[in-house]
Amino acid sequence: MDKTLIYGIVNKGKFYSDNMEVPVKIEDGIYSIDVSSDDYLDSISVADIFEFEKYIKNKPKMEFVTGYTFGANQVVPMDYIKWEKNGFPTITNDNLRLEEWSLGKFLHIPTKKIFFFLEYVFNSLYERLQEVRNHYDKNKPLLDLKEITPEMKLVYAFNLLEKLRIEEELKKLKEAEFRKTVLGRVETIISNSGGTFMSLKTYKNGYEIVWRMGRYNLNTYMNKNFGIIEAGFCLSGGDRKHTLNSIVKLLGDYIREDQHFAITRT
Image (cartoon, rainbow, N blue to C red; front, side, top):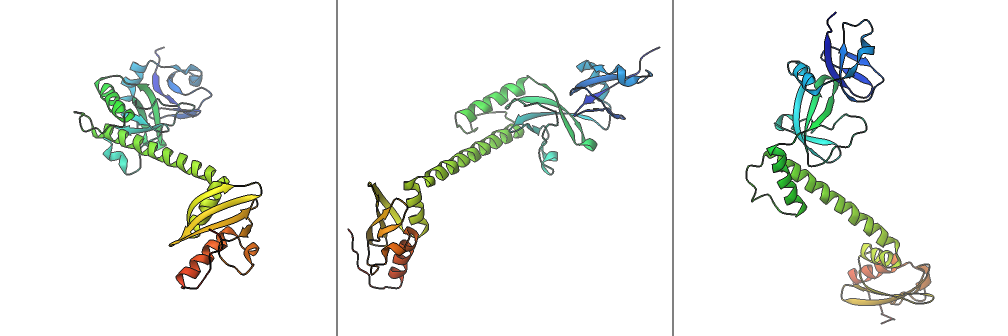
């Protein structure tokens, strides 16, 4: 009896072909099934890529897509304009991390929202992409490169945006760590309260802080718990009732309202 083979993919525990979708317990990949067999699911076997491609080529519910990889398993497909509205696809393969700056071939099943990686492609387009990558690695613009496609320019731009995002995240983390230090905390408090931090000296029992408000330089002394010992301007003996935040804001109020105050520390 002649075999009647159909071809498809297994993705996340299901076999998909043009008119078949059945659960299977087998890893992701391309497969064939002999549907003429009584126990056709037992006939599932790894398929030859060329036979698979010939079978899929004329199936209206499935299409091959070639595209460039970037980021977390995302793809800029050829003829990218038709993909922009719904966003660029992310592969649906289980437990697979795509190599970035690669050219790949994928199977797209729109009705199932499947975008399945098949294989890497190495051709003149791939070689041109590596020239784009080289410019990216060297922080060079693409102005001197000829014959690069819009899709390659997008991959370059997306990678650049991701680099900037990571740099910004690292900057925020460093700033957060800095704010945890005494110097960082003092500088942040003074800045957020309207003053300008100038310097900090550490002593056995506390800190001497020099800061500025308008045209006035202030010298404040506080203890290790950030309690104010001497504000640096007259508070009629009430220095210890204040915080660093409150004395900076209070001096700002005095200056804006043109109230008299006396500087007590220099």
